[in-house]
Amino acid sequence: MSQLSLMGLFGFLFVMGCSATRSNEIKGKTYEYLSWFDGDSSEEFDSYRKILSEKLEGVEEDKEDPTNVEKHLDYLASLDASGKKNGIENKIKAFIAKNPEEKRGLFLLGVHYMRNKRRELANHFFTLLEKDPNFVWKSLLYNNLGMLSLQDKERGKAIGYFEKAINTEPAIAAPRVNLGSLYIQSKSYLDALPLFKRALEIDSNFEDAALGLGLCYEAQGKFNEAHKVYSEFSESHSNCLTVLYNDALVLGRNLGKRQEASEMMLRYIQRGGKETAKAHEMIQGWR
Image (cartoon, rainbow, N blue to C red; front, side, top):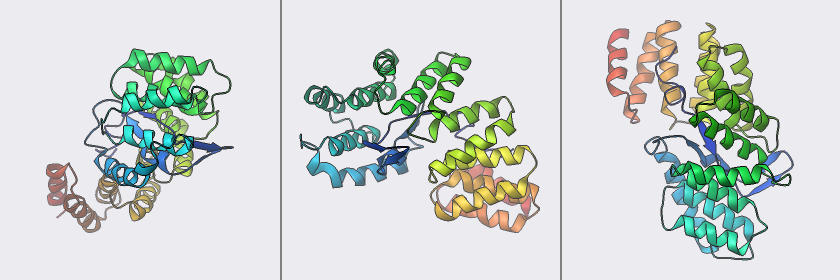
């Protein structure tokens, strides 16, 4: 198996949705930047924070518009995920006070607490929303409850929540990646593979979905299929270096294309990949 995978293989995700939903799809682009790893992930998400900072410049003027709930929610979600403090907790609470019927504000507050390691408060708000049959972001909610269960080392309960999330609208990628990662952990690659495949269909920009799918193929000895997944994702996501690293390993170790693998690993180094020492070692071994 490749050395870089799923941010250490088992970096599970909690998510915050964007501000609007429509039937079984998520409307808008904010959601793509709001998947977050549990734990200390500040360095891993530097590129997403840059995107969010740029996005904030475009919505700054709308943040105080009390008549535009969707844009205000979008702003709050982006601000929180960008890592900017700026009194975000109070901003979300002010939104809730002005819009008490809008339960998505409670969800944003719960995610804010979860992101800042205040699990008891996060669980309080998520549990309240779980009892609300009309809450529109149920799939995101179940995913986060699954994350809390994992933190409590309740694997079975977590799996149950991830399965609920998968079978609930709106369709999102994170619970599929989380459940797939648990299957990889138990070496159930055939069960994991369709989950990662569907996650990538839902969110084609989700690097961990591509990583998980590639790893499932690698574990089954299907290295050409793994290379295809990695290379297709890398072609349209040049800043996703973990996929590039894994692809180089597959080419050099398993497919005998050492020259191509060396060139790919060199690109990984030049683009700022963190595993520089290992990459140089691989290149030397393929010469």
